[in-house]
Image 1 (cartoon, one colour):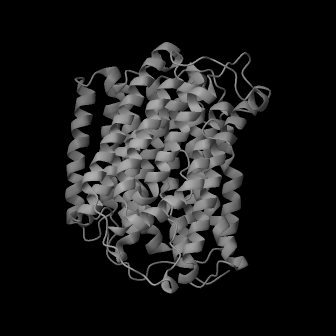
Image 2 (tube, rainbow, N blue to C red; image 1 turned 90 degrees about the horizontal axis):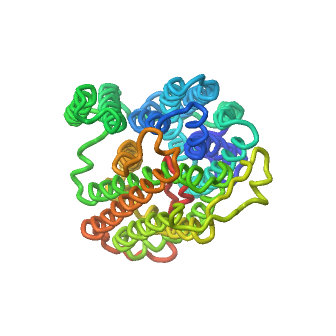
Amino acid sequence: MGTSGELSYASAAGRWVIAATVLGSGMAAIDATVVGIALPTIGRHFHAALGTLQWVVTGYTLTLAALLLLGGSLGDRFGRRQVFCVGIVWFAVASAACGFAPGSTALILARVVQGAGAALLTPGSLAILQASFSPEDRGRAIGAWSGLGGVASATGPLLGGYLIAAASWRWIFFINIPVGVLVLVLSIRHVPESQDPTVSGHIDVLGAVVGMASLAAVTYALIEGPGRGFGSPSVLVVLVSGLVGGVVFLLVERASPAPMLPLTLFGERQFSVTNGVTFIIYAALGGALFLLPVELQVDNHYTAFQSGVSLIPLTVVMLLLSARSGRLASRIGPRLQMGVGPVVVGAGLALLIRTTSSSIVVRAIGSAAAGTGPGAASGASPGSYVTGVLPAVLVFGLGLAITVAPLTATALGAAPAEHAGVASAVNNYVARVGSLLAVAVLPALAGISGSSYLHAQALSAGFRKAMIISASMCAIGGVIAGIGIRNPPRVTTPPSTRARPERIHCALDAPPLGAET
């Protein structure tokens, strides 16, 4: 086992650490993408309404978002490898519970538990790399982790679609068990232990509990409100309780000597604006990408495998362009890209309107790859991919490539250097909360509720509205970024002293965003 803070990127010990952290964080990222592909199949299996599918997604995101910052704090205090290993075991056991779930309620509860495990392992993977590698090799290690993590995540939709076709949706959860065992063995044998010796004071458990309770209450009201009515006492009381809980959460964090969410960071305008844009953009993405696999499978009759394959160009574009986008932003400043990028993302979302049955000619695609594969749907006739889906996915991916790297780098750069880790965690937290709330509210705003998602015509109409809403949100985010973001003053650095920029990764519950700079 290597020594913490002294590992070399080129050493065998360093490569083992990278492998363990990539597989660990990749396991959580893949799970998020494959569940999206499996939603229509899960809905049909359990005869579930749309609200149930929303809870399958938001139950996981809820605990992950609420406990993410706490998970990072636990690693700093009790040992990053130890907490990472606990998260792996927790995640794998919860995955098994998901796979064996006899009904939708049991599945949702298992997903809630699974999200808590992901909150322990997700921040730990990057923290382990930061603590384990020597300063001169840290950037290369993080870059390899980010790039390989993007490739691993890209396999999620493809793997999920194949497992659903070849076996059952339950296998998208069972596959985590052998991967978890492998990661656990690698971590115990090869990952050095590390912790922050300067950590003092109490752990902000109260903040985590209050934050999760308020998020859960608001999410419940937004999901159940359309069906029961927002004037219903049960919904209204929970909604008000959630909003009051949000205020209490802010007061707790303000008073805490070691807050989970340091509010003082938001005193910096650049940090506040960047996180505001992050919330808007990832809310638009979370809601849109929740509905897209459902639209492709229900309205356009894609198989689960085909809907997974259809999103691969998004990842390819991100992997090819994200690093270049980050380098460009470092030269010209982030303002232009953060202003233009969200508008391009919005254009891609608007183009997704063309995937609906009323806008495209139905053709067969991927029959050689999926139609003849195991479990292919008999008589399935996927919508025109080349004219309907591909242009939207390419524009969408281009917009993300323009936006994500400078957005993440700006969030980190706006905070003092000693708070870079906290700033990254806060930016990640804000993105996940935005996605969580959007999955809860966007279907209702678009008129999709109950079992209407199983009826192509109703789903198609709602999907078009949802894409317009999401595209508009992205455009608003771009305007806010263009007005509010400021380019930092340029510092001329002699060529001989220029260091290779570190790659930054913002792990999200969305199709993989590749390697960012």
